[in-house]
Length: 421
Ligand SMILES: Cc1cc2nc3c(=O)[nH]c(=O)nc-3n(C[C@H](O)[C@H](O)[C@H](O)COP(=O)(O)O)c2cc1C
Image (tube, rainbow, N blue to C red; front, side, top):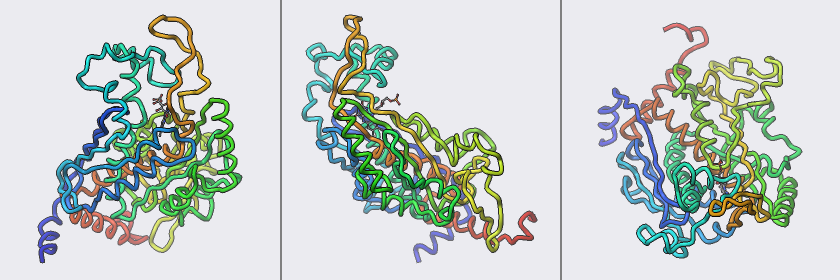
């Protein structure tokens, strides 16, 4: 009775939701905070669901000691009651277990002159530029916030977006394509763009498979070779980067727009993923490869399957004119090698202005598997942002009603009447 009234009361309005999140916290501070706003009420969400994603971010062969100290758990502070969102801001806290070893160094109030300052910046990190820009007298200040520890708070925030998308059959998955230049002989992505899997691709299935691998690859032989390469890197005191794919399936036609630059879905997704620490490249669909081919080998022919439009190929990676086509969204990212090297590069000591070897600091050797999970989360946020801009809703029931009306209208149009009003 209650829900019938509900739908009746809401189905004529459409609220444009602007979702936002902010993260706070230093790498070795007390903890991390995420504040998420703009989501409809009545969306089911639990700490367990968020923590599953946090656990995925922590995994991967090649991580350093820090990930052994931490076992990230988000505590929801506000915005959720009885496992349902209230529509109010959702705030979460993730404790840094390592904090107890850093209470003096990271004290909010203690006189900083008693603490040994860091004066040797690591190449490839934010150490030097951050110190110059913010006029810090201790490189530690730069290290603490530029660290990818911040991404734990992002993954927690983006889990709300992921949960929203799952209500509409949209899943986001990822796998590692290469680490240290080691690729699989099976070019999986080629099949997504050109092969039989264009239609049948499932992000959930990709995650199920990649999560089983210690380096989140889809090929066991490649995994072995990568682990050997990571061991080699460790022995040399060196680090590695790699490439990864993010795939979103179940995305409806029509998210994003070409009408202005801020509405472009490909731009939003790219920005989200390149904002991850150490990510240096993003491609949508064939990406850079599309610049090397004839047009006929790049664009996806349009045909009909019953009353629905379809494509035999998905080289565009699910986006045309900055709008989702309804086919899987395929994004590729590149992560540079970790900047902290145990066999350090040269740098300048800011206290003496003399040449010196860079500092060694407890660090990961490889973090591409974690980076792929973070990229998944960021993509989920970007998709949820455009999804809620399109379908709105103060409560999830209203979002669902708006979504149903849209898809019914879309699929209700016949071949002959498509362009008629
Ligand atoms: C999941 C993840 C873990 C990382 N772990 C480390 C690390 O342990 N040590 C390190 O020096 N850099 C690490 N990085 C990379 C640095 O955060 C990155 O090199 C730094 O922020 C500068 O990159 P930027 O130039 O892209 O900002 C990590 C990055 C990610 C995404």
